[in-house]
Image (cartoon, rainbow, N blue to C red; front, side, top):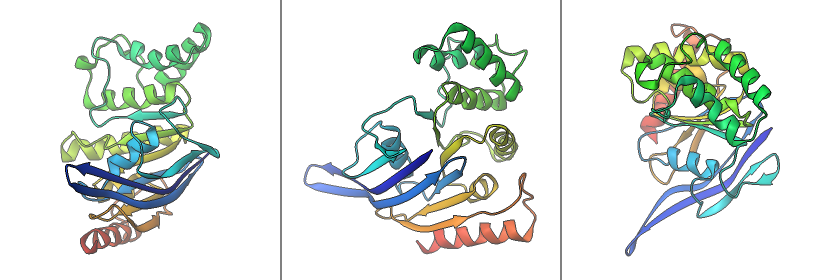
Length: 247
């Protein structure tokens, strides 16, 4: 699997004014990498993610998945929204089965895949519950494995932990990292949280506040799970914070 972003630009027009939110952004995500797009609010992170997902068109450039140009949304890309977007009228089981039904998986394969995902996400015993009955961690794990259920080639996540408080966020980061480590699906995630980026990512791509340009592409070569108190961890965190301040 290879995801290539080639010179993507996005300009929004409003009456006589125009606003450039992305300017010739290019990078490649390779198989099994966890890559994060980091930057301040309004720098174009989510816009870029939705262009990759096929939810909106770029003003220039192209997206390629395994050498094929992406024209629209498709099952080869899973998406996790900031608020998880679980169907409230469906149980955990039904939410996870939904993308497999949409893709036409045979019933036996759906049930086998469901069982595998419930075990992986430690959701056995709660599969008959509705989203309103779940803890924040359970909602996150359900959204994550639902996005994996249809076997996408890349998982796109838009601020998946953005709606929780600081302490819960750190705990959910650890849960997400453990869950990803079991599967190693290729991930491209958006966040504005530097600590989250360092904790979860193999690479962190920093976007500038103006005109959404790449100002840093930093490899995080640390063992997992990561110790937030290590000098190397704090060095990488400080480096990224400095880039954000200067750009």
